[in-house]
Length: 314
Image 1: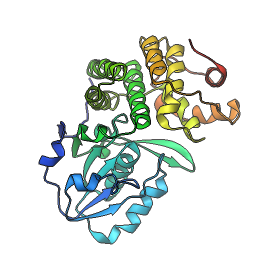
Image 2: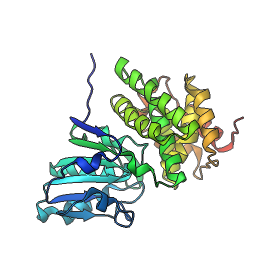
Image 3: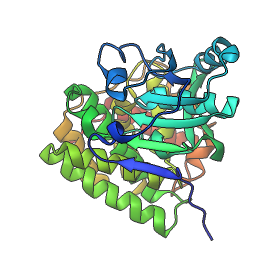
């Protein structure tokens, strides 16, 4: 037996947002620059509140600030507009305030618009919150937003999606449907990245979210957070942590993932803190490690961190 959780309404397609009627008196949760980039103008909202201070790798304090700031506004619903950071904060706040939630990705990699997961920093460390009540009521996936995205954003978002679907396929918590979705997502993303077909990247990211969001990512994500805590973007960290995790797990995706990392030409990452201290933190991430296809010891983690820091691939 297995259970699949997804938004009851998913609307996909270029300019699909232009045909959607947004609720009145909504709260838009987004990042700095949403106005200057024309995102709000594109949505054609005319009755809304806005919080546009979501930071990369957001903290739980940001979510609590929103709850406190808008408690008396009696907003009707929440629109999470942006990348994974903005959508994760929006989901957490909507769950806390019991509001209707609409998620709109402007980058395509996190899959957050269709998952039950939000990732926030707690005491400076990334933590995953898994809750069925965080799933969007409506996900609007409009490829219009990828057209003007900087190459660096596309690159980091795309590798995030590739890491998620390939880890999800290997997850012990997977089932026939999640493996089908994760495999389909990988095929789309691989072709999209190697041929720079942006429409395939957008669709692959959506399907990846539906796949891994109903099982789990694994060792690559567990390893990545200590690098993100030191300032590396999530995608940049995953390009190497998932690569070496796939090698450790003997994943069917290792060589294809390696080709994608080479194509995207990521610079090396380097962990500053001690391997021993980092390993202790990584081993607390049971959600990811318990679903990894192979058991992972502290010595395994230390060896992987050393390999990520010093290893070269060809």
